[in-house]
Length: 602
Image (cartoon, rainbow, N blue to C red; front, side):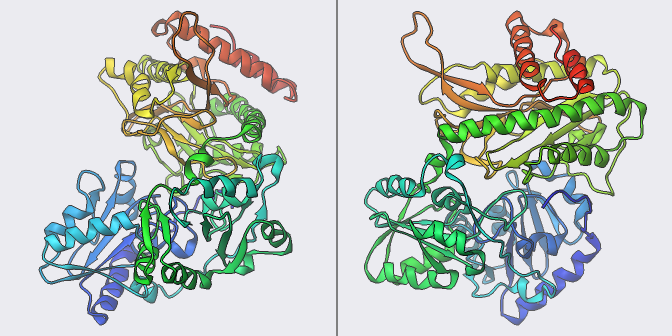
């Protein structure tokens, strides 16, 4: 599933679809309904049949929630989507609200009528979320009620069927550890629980060394699993996804059961008074309710696969290095083509995006993009999570900056890289802002820190130069990245809220930016892996640091050298020397010549 550029959002459909939903709510004796942008697994990417929020409102962003009452409705989005929601949604029907500044719970408290029944689908909300909505509904004098079947599905006449993509074993040379050993580690970490409920497909993919194809851009096998304290595991999955090869692989470590068997398995745990670990931040409320009703004891805790999955082993790190070398050559071919072609005119955002995808496909190893490419020319680059469509497509014009944030899925690793390049000659302000972003990027790349340091403690290093100029950016500085899995992986992140200590083997992005609304956007992103740092002479504590994985030139035409320190110049020159040495072999002569100039010493 590679990128498409159509945007089927039609704001004009919102009023009619909202009416159909309201008619169904009235028929059921309900006064409102919550529509999240999620499926039963609470992941970032959802299959077409679960795109309920998009069908109802037209909004296609990766995070959001709508609340429909009988006389009013609102849609909640975060800061990435404040512009997008107004172009895709009928705001006369769905009033836009900021997810953080004007949260849904406050809206419920202010707008739910006394005595009203606000409904929700317990498969589509986490335990924590339901608790918040329940408290808000009660504060308003109403009640929050679960539904057995989703009323929106009842009026979505052409809803696609659930996906049934085949699962594939993930080879040991990529995984680096047999599934049986992973299950032993997870079982040993349950600390008093008799079993752990896994609801996140990336955890299941990691634990059982399998990959799937149920959603775009991430090789997920949509399924649920139980890992028992004795090491036994059960996988609940649509059996159409399991062929003989997958069954043989799984048969050594896990019992494969139909998805429909899960309710009975939870009931059995309850009947035997077992203690089950669930993650309240990701587990569907339905599962928690079923366990409690059956008599099980629910122990709340973090998904036990999350941290070990994040700390990559040697095979996974070697694999991601190979993936970045391959990806870096493809990206460099693109940047060379762009540098020679774009100034002549005739290139637009879609053309550029397709060309980059073609260079990656030329490797013969590309499985998918890791997300829809952000290809933003001029003002569109200032939209942090911009997604180009036929309707928004803009030409790359001289004097503008072009921001391209892209990534790929390979069997040996997942990539994510952003480069900002000048089309023609950048002006003084653009060079100033670019260089301040670069200084922040170098600040993270060269950081040294003791064990136990969290991402929030490093975040200011990326922002300091911007802060000195009265500037900032509103997104996080870095997110975790999986190994042929999700391009956005927890628990690690570098942000003002990043509270999880960074550990060796964690892969994380380094992507400070700056965005001038209506003018341009700048972001410089490499992926890093946390490593033990070299001992410092006279130092008293061992330190951690980062190895930069991404290999691609940074546009020197945008650099204002006078703003850089000697140490920053040395880092940039050393990075470019490494890029040149690593990528030049196997590049065509024309691209190699371009790369030599693009990575020149300054």
